[in-house]
Amino acid sequence: MRLAELSRRSGVSTATIKYYLREGLLPPGRQLNTTTAEYDAEHLRRLQLVRAMIQVGGLPVATVREVLGHVDDDSLGRTLRMGAALWALPQVPEPDEDDAFVRAAHQEAGALLETLGWSNAKLLTTVSPAYRSLVVAVAAFRRLGYDWDAELLVSYAKLMHEAARLDLDNVETYPSEAEKVETAVLSAVLVEPMLQALHRLAQEEESARRYGFE
Amino acid sequence: MRLAELSRRSGVSTATIKYYLREGLLPPGRQLNTTTAEYDAEHLRRLQLVRAMIQVGGLPVATVREVLGHVDDDSLGRTLRMGAALWALPQVPEPDEDDAFVRAAHQEAGALLETLGWSNAKLLTTVSPAYRSLVVAVAAFRRLGYDWDAELLVSYAKLMHEAARLDLDNVETYPSEAEKVETAVLSAVLVEPMLQALHRLAQEEESARRYGFE
Image (cartoon, rainbow over all chains, first blue to last red; front, top):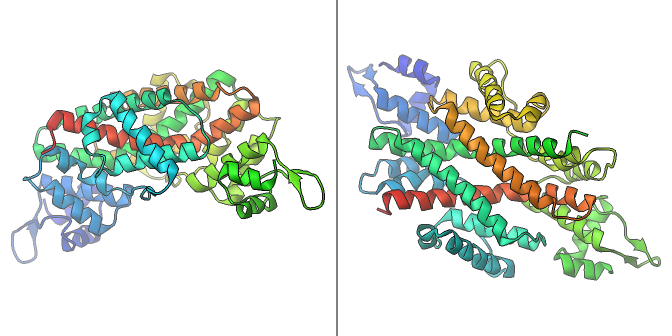
Protein backbone atom coordinates (compact mmCIF):
# COMPACT_ATOMS: atom_id res chain seq x y z
CA MET A 1 0.00 0.00 0.00
CA ARG A 2 1.04 3.63 -0.54
CA LEU A 3 1.48 6.21 2.23
CA ALA A 4 -2.07 7.53 1.77
CA GLU A 5 -3.57 4.10 2.28
CA LEU A 6 -1.34 3.37 5.27
CA SER A 7 -2.66 6.62 6.74
CA ARG A 8 -6.29 5.76 5.96
CA ARG A 9 -6.04 2.25 7.37
CA SER A 10 -4.20 3.28 10.53
CA GLY A 11 -6.05 6.54 11.18
CA VAL A 12 -2.63 8.23 11.58
CA SER A 13 -2.04 11.36 9.49
CA THR A 14 0.55 11.22 6.68
CA ALA A 15 2.48 14.04 8.41
CA THR A 16 2.74 11.95 11.60
CA ILE A 17 3.75 8.85 9.65
CA LYS A 18 6.52 10.85 7.93
CA TYR A 19 7.67 12.08 11.33
CA TYR A 20 7.82 8.51 12.66
CA LEU A 21 9.77 7.47 9.54
CA ARG A 22 12.28 10.31 10.06
CA GLU A 23 12.66 9.39 13.73
CA GLY A 24 13.32 5.77 12.83
CA LEU A 25 10.24 4.48 14.68
CA LEU A 26 8.95 2.95 11.47
CA PRO A 27 11.18 1.11 8.98
CA PRO A 28 11.32 2.72 5.51
CA GLY A 29 8.97 1.40 2.84
CA ARG A 30 10.15 -0.33 -0.31
CA GLN A 31 11.12 2.54 -2.62
CA LEU A 32 9.24 2.22 -5.97
CA ASN A 33 10.76 5.38 -7.41
CA THR A 34 12.22 8.59 -6.03
CA THR A 35 8.86 9.88 -4.72
CA THR A 36 6.83 6.74 -3.99
CA ALA A 37 7.30 3.98 -1.45
CA GLU A 38 5.28 0.86 -0.79
CA TYR A 39 4.26 -0.26 2.72
CA ASP A 40 2.96 -3.62 3.92
CA ALA A 41 1.01 -5.21 6.78
CA GLU A 42 4.08 -5.14 9.01
CA HIS A 43 4.32 -1.38 8.67
CA LEU A 44 0.67 -1.08 9.66
CA ARG A 45 1.21 -3.24 12.75
CA ARG A 46 4.34 -1.35 13.75
CA LEU A 47 2.52 1.94 13.31
CA GLN A 48 -0.25 0.81 15.67
CA LEU A 49 2.34 -0.24 18.20
CA VAL A 50 4.17 3.10 18.02
CA ARG A 51 0.93 5.03 18.37
CA ALA A 52 -0.16 2.97 21.37
CA MET A 53 3.12 3.61 23.17
CA ILE A 54 3.08 7.35 22.42
CA GLN A 55 -0.61 8.23 22.68
CA VAL A 56 -1.87 5.78 25.27
CA GLY A 57 1.31 4.90 27.16
CA GLY A 58 2.61 8.47 27.04
CA LEU A 59 6.17 7.31 26.26
CA PRO A 60 8.65 9.80 24.79
CA VAL A 61 9.91 9.16 21.24
CA ALA A 62 13.41 8.26 22.47
CA THR A 63 11.94 5.61 24.81
CA VAL A 64 9.80 4.17 22.03
CA ARG A 65 12.92 3.88 19.85
CA GLU A 66 14.70 2.06 22.67
CA VAL A 67 11.76 -0.30 23.27
CA LEU A 68 11.54 -1.11 19.55
CA GLY A 69 15.25 -1.88 19.56
CA HIS A 70 14.62 -4.59 22.15
CA VAL A 71 11.44 -5.81 20.43
CA ASP A 72 13.43 -6.34 17.20
CA ASP A 73 16.46 -7.91 18.87
CA ASP A 74 16.29 -11.58 17.84
CA SER A 75 19.19 -12.41 20.12
CA LEU A 76 16.91 -11.83 23.15
CA GLY A 77 14.43 -14.48 24.29
CA ARG A 78 10.70 -13.85 24.22
CA THR A 79 10.46 -12.92 27.91
CA LEU A 80 12.98 -10.11 27.54
CA ARG A 81 11.59 -8.88 24.23
CA MET A 82 8.05 -8.85 25.64
CA GLY A 83 9.19 -7.16 28.81
CA ALA A 84 10.82 -4.31 26.91
CA ALA A 85 7.78 -2.02 27.00
CA LEU A 86 6.80 -2.93 30.51
CA TRP A 87 10.19 -1.94 31.83
CA ALA A 88 10.13 1.32 29.88
CA LEU A 89 6.73 2.44 31.21
CA PRO A 90 6.75 5.29 33.71
CA GLN A 91 7.78 3.85 37.05
CA VAL A 92 7.31 4.93 40.62
CA PRO A 93 10.23 6.76 42.24
CA GLU A 94 13.06 4.59 43.58
CA PRO A 95 12.46 3.37 47.12
CA ASP A 96 14.63 5.08 49.74
CA GLU A 97 16.72 2.19 51.03
CA ASP A 98 17.63 4.07 54.21
CA ASP A 99 13.98 4.22 55.23
CA ALA A 100 12.93 1.67 57.88
CA PHE A 101 9.53 1.14 56.21
CA VAL A 102 11.23 0.41 52.88
CA ARG A 103 13.54 -2.12 54.51
CA ALA A 104 10.54 -3.80 56.17
CA ALA A 105 8.68 -3.74 52.85
CA HIS A 106 11.57 -5.64 51.21
CA GLN A 107 11.12 -8.35 53.84
CA GLU A 108 7.37 -8.42 53.33
CA ALA A 109 7.57 -8.45 49.52
CA GLY A 110 10.20 -11.20 49.64
CA ALA A 111 8.02 -13.30 51.94
CA LEU A 112 5.07 -12.72 49.60
CA LEU A 113 6.99 -14.02 46.57
CA GLU A 114 8.04 -17.02 48.65
CA THR A 115 4.44 -17.76 49.71
CA LEU A 116 3.23 -17.41 46.12
CA GLY A 117 5.99 -19.60 44.77
CA TRP A 118 6.98 -16.89 42.30
CA SER A 119 10.56 -18.13 42.09
CA ASN A 120 11.26 -16.43 38.76
CA ALA A 121 10.10 -13.04 40.00
CA LYS A 122 12.29 -13.65 43.04
CA LEU A 123 15.34 -13.99 40.82
CA LEU A 124 14.56 -10.60 39.26
CA THR A 125 14.15 -8.54 42.43
CA THR A 126 17.42 -6.68 42.01
CA VAL A 127 16.58 -5.50 38.49
CA SER A 128 12.79 -5.45 38.20
CA PRO A 129 10.97 -2.09 38.29
CA ALA A 130 7.77 -4.03 39.11
CA TYR A 131 9.37 -5.37 42.27
CA ARG A 132 10.52 -1.87 43.25
CA SER A 133 6.95 -0.59 42.68
CA LEU A 134 5.64 -3.29 44.96
CA VAL A 135 8.12 -2.35 47.69
CA VAL A 136 7.12 1.32 47.38
CA ALA A 137 3.41 0.42 47.59
CA VAL A 138 3.86 -1.89 50.59
CA ALA A 139 5.99 0.72 52.38
CA ALA A 140 3.27 3.35 51.76
CA PHE A 141 0.64 1.08 53.33
CA ARG A 142 2.73 0.40 56.39
CA ARG A 143 3.89 3.99 56.82
CA LEU A 144 0.24 5.05 56.87
CA GLY A 145 -0.45 2.60 59.65
CA TYR A 146 -2.69 0.65 57.31
CA ASP A 147 -2.93 -2.65 59.04
CA TRP A 148 -4.08 -5.33 56.63
CA ASP A 149 -2.91 -8.87 56.86
CA ALA A 150 -0.50 -10.67 54.56
CA GLU A 151 -3.26 -12.97 53.33
CA LEU A 152 -5.08 -10.11 51.62
CA LEU A 153 -1.92 -9.30 49.68
CA VAL A 154 -1.61 -12.96 48.66
CA SER A 155 -5.22 -12.92 47.44
CA TYR A 156 -4.66 -9.78 45.35
CA ALA A 157 -1.48 -11.29 43.91
CA LYS A 158 -3.29 -14.46 42.88
CA LEU A 159 -5.91 -12.41 41.03
CA MET A 160 -3.19 -10.50 39.22
CA HIS A 161 -1.44 -13.75 38.35
CA GLU A 162 -4.71 -14.89 36.76
CA ALA A 163 -4.82 -11.60 34.81
CA ALA A 164 -1.23 -12.18 33.63
CA ARG A 165 -2.19 -15.67 32.45
CA LEU A 166 -5.05 -14.17 30.43
CA ASP A 167 -2.61 -11.61 28.96
CA LEU A 168 -0.21 -14.31 27.81
CA ASP A 169 -2.92 -16.72 26.64
CA ASN A 170 -4.13 -13.90 24.40
CA VAL A 171 -0.59 -13.18 23.19
CA GLU A 172 -0.16 -16.82 22.24
CA THR A 173 -3.15 -16.77 19.89
CA TYR A 174 -1.05 -14.71 17.46
CA PRO A 175 0.76 -16.80 14.85
CA SER A 176 4.17 -15.20 14.32
CA GLU A 177 6.87 -14.49 16.89
CA ALA A 178 6.92 -10.80 15.83
CA GLU A 179 3.16 -10.50 16.40
CA LYS A 180 3.42 -12.26 19.76
CA VAL A 181 6.07 -9.84 20.96
CA GLU A 182 4.24 -6.81 19.57
CA THR A 183 0.94 -7.88 21.12
CA ALA A 184 2.64 -8.32 24.48
CA VAL A 185 4.06 -4.80 24.25
CA LEU A 186 0.69 -3.35 23.17
CA SER A 187 -1.17 -5.07 25.95
CA ALA A 188 1.39 -3.90 28.52
CA VAL A 189 0.43 -0.36 27.55
CA LEU A 190 -3.32 -0.91 27.09
CA VAL A 191 -4.33 -3.51 29.66
CA GLU A 192 -3.41 -1.51 32.75
CA PRO A 193 -5.84 1.40 32.15
CA MET A 194 -8.50 -1.18 31.29
CA LEU A 195 -8.00 -3.13 34.53
CA GLN A 196 -8.01 0.09 36.54
CA ALA A 197 -11.31 1.20 34.98
CA LEU A 198 -12.85 -2.23 35.57
CA HIS A 199 -11.65 -2.25 39.18
CA ARG A 200 -13.26 1.12 39.91
CA LEU A 201 -16.46 0.10 38.18
CA ALA A 202 -16.54 -3.18 40.12
CA GLN A 203 -16.13 -1.22 43.37
CA GLU A 204 -19.18 0.86 42.47
CA GLU A 205 -21.18 -2.23 41.58
CA GLU A 206 -20.20 -4.22 44.67
CA SER A 207 -20.64 -1.28 47.01
CA ALA A 208 -24.14 -0.55 45.64
CA ARG A 209 -25.04 -4.25 45.98
CA ARG A 210 -23.99 -4.30 49.61
CA TYR A 211 -25.11 -0.88 50.82
CA GLY A 212 -27.51 0.48 48.18
CA PHE A 213 -27.19 3.93 46.68
CA GLU A 214 -28.11 6.20 49.55
CA MET B 1 -2.02 13.53 72.99
CA ARG B 2 -0.20 16.80 72.30
CA LEU B 3 0.92 18.03 68.87
CA ALA B 4 4.44 16.63 69.36
CA GLU B 5 3.11 13.16 70.06
CA LEU B 6 0.65 13.32 67.15
CA SER B 7 3.66 14.16 64.98
CA ARG B 8 5.75 11.34 66.42
CA ARG B 9 3.01 8.73 66.06
CA SER B 10 2.04 9.77 62.53
CA GLY B 11 5.51 10.50 61.19
CA VAL B 12 4.17 13.86 59.91
CA SER B 13 6.14 16.95 60.93
CA THR B 14 4.50 19.45 63.30
CA ALA B 15 4.83 22.15 60.62
CA THR B 16 2.85 20.02 58.16
CA ILE B 17 0.22 19.19 60.80
CA LYS B 18 -0.19 22.92 61.51
CA TYR B 19 -0.58 23.54 57.79
CA TYR B 20 -3.30 20.87 57.54
CA LEU B 21 -5.05 22.41 60.57
CA ARG B 22 -4.95 25.89 58.95
CA GLU B 23 -6.31 24.48 55.69
CA GLY B 24 -9.16 22.76 57.52
CA LEU B 25 -8.03 19.25 56.49
CA LEU B 26 -7.76 18.26 60.14
CA PRO B 27 -10.33 19.28 62.78
CA PRO B 28 -8.92 21.48 65.57
CA GLY B 29 -7.81 19.77 68.77
CA ARG B 30 -9.45 20.35 72.12
CA GLN B 31 -7.92 23.60 73.37
CA LEU B 32 -6.39 23.09 76.82
CA ASN B 33 -5.13 26.66 77.10
CA THR B 34 -4.13 29.39 74.68
CA THR B 35 -1.00 27.55 73.50
CA THR B 36 -1.79 23.86 73.97
CA ALA B 37 -4.34 21.60 72.29
CA GLU B 38 -5.13 17.94 72.85
CA TYR B 39 -5.56 15.47 69.97
CA ASP B 40 -7.07 11.98 69.92
CA ALA B 41 -7.09 8.75 67.93
CA GLU B 42 -9.51 10.25 65.40
CA HIS B 43 -7.06 13.03 64.63
CA LEU B 44 -4.37 10.44 64.04
CA ARG B 45 -6.58 8.46 61.66
CA ARG B 46 -7.66 11.57 59.79
CA LEU B 47 -4.05 12.65 59.47
CA GLN B 48 -3.10 9.32 57.89
CA LEU B 49 -6.00 9.65 55.46
CA VAL B 50 -5.01 13.19 54.46
CA ARG B 51 -1.41 12.17 53.95
CA ALA B 52 -2.38 9.17 51.82
CA MET B 53 -4.49 11.32 49.54
CA ILE B 54 -1.83 14.01 49.17
CA GLN B 55 1.40 11.99 49.11
CA VAL B 56 0.30 8.74 47.51
CA GLY B 57 -2.82 9.79 45.58
CA GLY B 58 -1.28 13.11 44.51
CA LEU B 59 -4.53 14.99 45.17
CA PRO B 60 -4.43 18.78 45.56
CA VAL B 61 -5.36 20.23 48.96
CA ALA B 62 -8.65 21.67 47.63
CA THR B 63 -9.69 18.23 46.36
CA VAL B 64 -8.80 16.60 49.68
CA ARG B 65 -10.98 19.16 51.47
CA GLU B 66 -13.85 18.36 49.10
CA VAL B 67 -13.41 14.59 49.55
CA LEU B 68 -13.37 14.96 53.35
CA GLY B 69 -16.58 17.00 53.11
CA HIS B 70 -18.26 13.98 51.52
CA VAL B 71 -16.62 11.51 53.89
CA ASP B 72 -18.03 13.44 56.86
CA ASP B 73 -21.50 13.98 55.39
CA ASP B 74 -23.76 11.71 57.46
CA SER B 75 -26.69 12.46 55.17
CA LEU B 76 -25.01 10.43 52.40
CA GLY B 77 -25.19 6.63 52.39
CA ARG B 78 -22.06 4.52 52.74
CA THR B 79 -21.69 3.91 48.99
CA LEU B 80 -21.53 7.63 48.21
CA ARG B 81 -19.30 8.45 51.18
CA MET B 82 -16.91 5.64 50.24
CA GLY B 83 -16.94 6.64 46.59
CA ALA B 84 -15.94 10.22 47.39
CA ALA B 85 -12.20 9.65 46.99
CA LEU B 86 -12.52 7.33 44.04
CA TRP B 87 -14.41 9.93 42.08
CA ALA B 88 -11.92 12.64 43.01
CA LEU B 89 -8.86 10.68 41.86
CA PRO B 90 -7.21 11.86 38.64
CA GLN B 91 -9.34 10.62 35.78
CA VAL B 92 -8.68 10.00 32.11
CA PRO B 93 -9.73 12.75 29.71
CA GLU B 94 -13.41 12.84 28.73
CA PRO B 95 -14.22 10.59 25.77
CA ASP B 96 -14.92 12.48 22.53
CA GLU B 97 -18.57 11.58 21.89
CA ASP B 98 -18.33 12.56 18.21
CA ASP B 99 -15.70 9.87 17.63
CA ALA B 100 -17.00 6.69 15.97
CA PHE B 101 -14.73 4.49 18.11
CA VAL B 102 -16.06 6.10 21.29
CA ARG B 103 -19.65 5.53 20.21
CA ALA B 104 -18.86 1.88 19.45
CA ALA B 105 -17.08 1.60 22.82
CA HIS B 106 -20.25 2.77 24.60
CA GLN B 107 -22.11 -0.09 22.93
CA GLU B 108 -19.41 -2.56 23.87
CA ALA B 109 -19.12 -1.35 27.48
CA GLY B 110 -22.91 -1.41 27.85
CA ALA B 111 -23.05 -4.97 26.54
CA LEU B 112 -20.24 -5.93 28.93
CA LEU B 113 -22.16 -4.62 31.97
CA GLU B 114 -25.22 -6.51 30.73
CA THR B 115 -23.26 -9.77 30.38
CA LEU B 116 -21.73 -9.33 33.82
CA GLY B 117 -25.06 -8.51 35.43
CA TRP B 118 -23.61 -5.30 36.85
CA SER B 119 -27.00 -3.63 36.99
CA ASN B 120 -25.94 -1.04 39.58
CA ALA B 121 -22.94 0.06 37.55
CA LYS B 122 -25.27 0.29 34.58
CA LEU B 123 -27.46 2.79 36.43
CA LEU B 124 -24.38 4.97 37.03
CA THR B 125 -23.04 5.15 33.47
CA THR B 126 -24.08 8.78 32.95
CA VAL B 127 -22.26 9.99 36.06
CA SER B 128 -19.45 7.51 36.75
CA PRO B 129 -15.85 8.48 35.93
CA ALA B 130 -14.98 4.75 36.08
CA TYR B 131 -17.43 4.04 33.28
CA ARG B 132 -15.96 6.87 31.19
CA SER B 133 -12.45 5.47 31.79
CA LEU B 134 -13.63 2.09 30.56
CA VAL B 135 -15.09 3.64 27.40
CA VAL B 136 -11.82 5.49 26.74
CA ALA B 137 -9.80 2.29 27.25
CA VAL B 138 -12.06 0.19 25.02
CA ALA B 139 -12.02 2.88 22.30
CA ALA B 140 -8.20 2.96 22.45
CA PHE B 141 -8.04 -0.82 21.93
CA ARG B 142 -10.38 -0.71 18.97
CA ARG B 143 -8.79 2.35 17.38
CA LEU B 144 -5.46 0.55 17.47
CA GLY B 145 -7.00 -2.36 15.61
CA TYR B 146 -6.40 -4.54 18.64
CA ASP B 147 -8.72 -7.43 17.98
CA TRP B 148 -9.44 -9.31 21.15
CA ASP B 149 -12.74 -10.94 21.87
CA ALA B 150 -15.43 -9.82 24.29
CA GLU B 151 -14.86 -12.89 26.47
CA LEU B 152 -11.40 -11.73 27.47
CA LEU B 153 -12.88 -8.45 28.69
CA VAL B 154 -15.48 -10.39 30.69
CA SER B 155 -12.71 -12.48 32.27
CA TYR B 156 -10.72 -9.39 33.27
CA ALA B 157 -13.89 -7.81 34.70
CA LYS B 158 -14.61 -10.87 36.82
CA LEU B 159 -11.10 -10.75 38.28
CA MET B 160 -11.55 -7.08 39.12
CA HIS B 161 -14.92 -7.83 40.71
CA GLU B 162 -13.16 -10.34 42.93
CA ALA B 163 -10.60 -7.66 43.85
CA ALA B 164 -13.43 -5.25 44.70
CA ARG B 165 -14.99 -7.90 46.95
CA LEU B 166 -11.66 -8.25 48.76
CA ASP B 167 -11.49 -4.44 49.12
CA LEU B 168 -14.93 -4.29 50.72
CA ASP B 169 -14.49 -7.40 52.87
CA ASN B 170 -11.43 -5.70 54.31
CA VAL B 171 -13.34 -2.43 54.82
CA GLU B 172 -16.02 -4.30 56.75
CA THR B 173 -13.54 -5.62 59.30
CA TYR B 174 -13.36 -2.10 60.76
CA PRO B 175 -15.77 -1.50 63.64
CA SER B 176 -17.08 2.03 63.27
CA GLU B 177 -18.85 3.60 60.31
CA ALA B 178 -16.25 6.40 60.23
CA GLU B 179 -13.40 3.87 60.07
CA LYS B 180 -15.19 1.91 57.35
CA VAL B 181 -15.58 5.00 55.19
CA GLU B 182 -12.03 6.17 55.84
CA THR B 183 -10.58 2.75 55.07
CA ALA B 184 -12.51 2.65 51.79
CA VAL B 185 -11.07 6.04 50.84
CA LEU B 186 -7.55 5.00 51.85
CA SER B 187 -7.71 1.78 49.92
CA ALA B 188 -9.05 3.57 46.84
CA VAL B 189 -5.80 5.54 46.84
CA LEU B 190 -3.45 2.74 47.89
CA VAL B 191 -4.80 -0.42 46.32
CA GLU B 192 -4.45 0.64 42.68
CA PRO B 193 -0.66 1.09 42.70
CA MET B 194 -0.40 -2.21 44.57
CA LEU B 195 -2.48 -4.10 42.01
CA GLN B 196 -0.50 -2.53 39.18
CA ALA B 197 2.81 -3.59 40.72
CA LEU B 198 1.51 -7.12 41.35
CA HIS B 199 0.20 -7.35 37.78
CA ARG B 200 3.57 -6.41 36.29
CA LEU B 201 5.38 -8.78 38.62
CA ALA B 202 2.96 -11.59 37.74
CA GLN B 203 3.62 -10.96 34.05
CA GLU B 204 7.35 -11.37 34.66
CA GLU B 205 6.78 -14.55 36.63
CA GLU B 206 4.34 -16.11 34.16
CA SER B 207 6.40 -15.11 31.15
CA ALA B 208 9.56 -16.62 32.64
CA ARG B 209 7.64 -19.80 33.51
CA ARG B 210 6.44 -20.17 29.95
CA TYR B 211 9.43 -18.99 27.96
CA GLY B 212 12.38 -18.97 30.34
CA PHE B 213 14.69 -16.01 30.75
CA GLU B 214 16.59 -15.95 27.48
